[in-house]
Length: 211
Image (cartoon, rainbow, N blue to C red; front, side, top):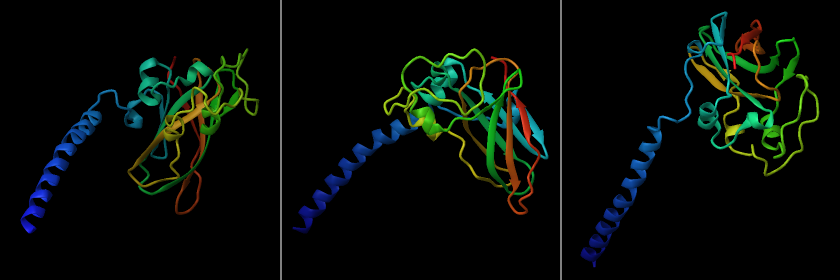
């Protein structure tokens, strides 16, 4: 009986190994996919600013390649949503706490508040809201729809959410704005504090790259 049990155990282990190898190979292939979403250093982007040894980049995502890499089949600009990637590098030598307020400043000085990821996810499938010009929130967003075209995990999953950045580390994620991408837009950002003393750092106004 013992010999039979050992034989059965050996067969089971061989079968398990055979099943595991293809899964591992697939995972490695996915990791090496050149189209996988990745974020560079803040200073590597055209639209960046450094104050008090904190470097922040603001990158509007508008091209087909950018959108596909970050959001898959979802196309936020088609429904009036501009995703802006925020990349923050902490070179202060101490931890910083984030309670960020982000606004997009248009060329004519309008301030447009960011839209919560949950609201973006539930925008209906109809055409984007016509705008003669940018308008600051609050204003009625398009009808909410549980099965809307932007109801994908990437919208909340890639949104900016870090609340603490250790010294020498970086953080990144998207803010969403209900506005078109136009020349001379800037991202206004405040709410960065020294994690120990609570002292607030100066606000940032980061130019976005041209469309």
